[in-house]
Length: 298
Ligand code: 5GP
Image (cartoon, rainbow, N blue to C red; front, top):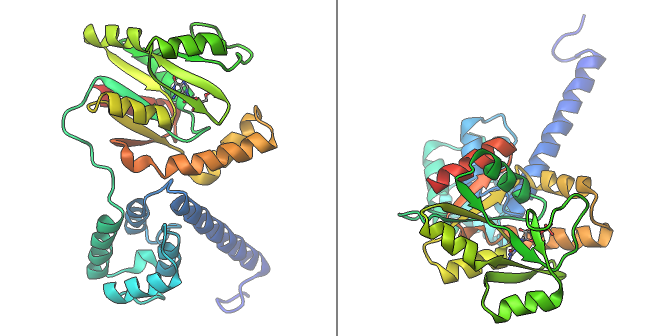
């Protein structure tokens, strides 16, 4: 008969598989922290909710070194200052330690705060392959009262894309003319390749009619819109995890190896800019995320 000290082989295999899965989940969470898909506060909240979760079982030392610009020396000074032992796991902190850590994190990595007063000009941005297009299309389908802006682009159409519906497909000369005539509210070269821009007139018309307008554009465009209209509401769409973003990018299969690597580099830079946004929405489920975006418009 097996006792606790001599578990049967099947139990040992199951336990080691469980340990491997837990380690993988923690490694994935560390990648989320490093790429800022999850804020440090998100991870602490998850650890408090469930001490047995990947967040809860993460060592405080691993947690701190996964944060931007924290090396081992700095980590040890922070732990001493917060009076937290380096052997602690996030889910095992005492109440005073939790409070000290939360305060330190809020000072060092402030979370975006929704601003008072919302504009009806809504900008949806986020890293490549996060599913901005799908979420925006879902908003359009379920909320016909919201105008989804149709951009102009110099990129050739992909199979199934319709001119005037997905984009206005134009050549370089036509794009130059639109820029020269100030027809675009914002425009940018995306992924160092093609140019994209938001036609100004349909937006101004819709806003004048009291409608909400949704722009699905890249980070450079979002910044330009904010500069042009400080009251615009900026929404950052996040993947559920960094690993999932990589998976979606590879799974889409529309880009070659070099292009994928370039887009992942861009994604990291884009994720680092989320602090400039008013709201963060996680695209874990398209209809749920679309409903959350649409609710921000109201
Ligand atoms: P895609 O070529 O895959 O349709 O889009 C590539 C990127 O261009 C996406 O990140 C999309 O958000 C961005 N984009 C689409 N339209 C515009 C636009 O009008 N302005 C800017 N700045 N980016 C856009």
